[in-house]
Length: 346
Image (cartoon, rainbow, N blue to C red; front, side, top):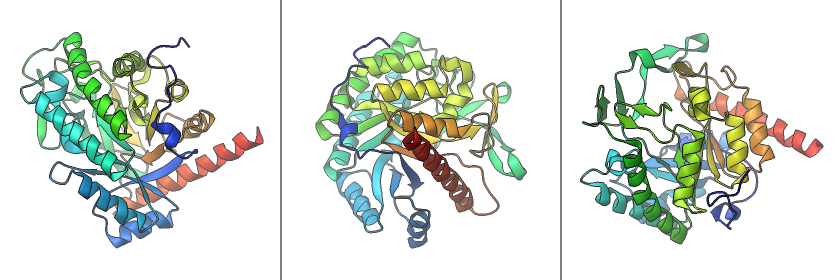
């Protein structure tokens, strides 16, 4: 692989993370005692958390870190929904610079609290789904059918076709806004020792509602990392999104893991499966989709991945959402043990 600005090695924050894959749970920052017990009983030692601007800040982040530490859990990452998937940043709207300053304060708060990672998504018009569908055993799961899709959502915001953001935007326009944002964010992330993992578009469609969605191809990821030019800007690789896109990515998910791992840009993995790629996919249980997830875990082991792998978008099992989490994490732990033992045997 040709060495570029994005791929050349510079000592970065990943090297301060202990070696080895860390299977983590995504939890509420306001957990019940039973939630904490449940996660520890599964043998999980790392968590990722999300909040919004009403709570975001160094004092709150530090308080959550201390609370989880009391229960033997390390906070690997903390996200802030109000500086994530922001059309103002992506499209250069009137409040762009205010949102960028808010994002920088989020990074500074993470640094002050000693939390090493945050996920960032750069979608201009939200996450798109159609009606829930049935997967194995009738479990309800997220579905997406391009032929029936009408709108994207990000919490209380709705983006409807035909023009989700009022007008057409060119690809270079959106790249310019990305560069304006990421160069500022990267410098703060480096100062604070915080990793930013950029999440793929969901679904990965290169243009939707008149707006480019940049993080829908491997080539665009490489361009984005080159623009950032920072060891602290890397990838939150959602396996499910990669499988949704199929050939649109230009490389398959195993090739992506190897490439980003070699570049030391792989910071976090969303470990999920889908039944088939676009134009119509349904999210499935990890052992019941189009991807052999052992091959994913094996590739992570082979590249020396040392971030967290978390379950994501788990189909609803019976009447308790914890059942799906327990099944998925148990399956992930078994795959990890097998990959680890095979690696040692070699």
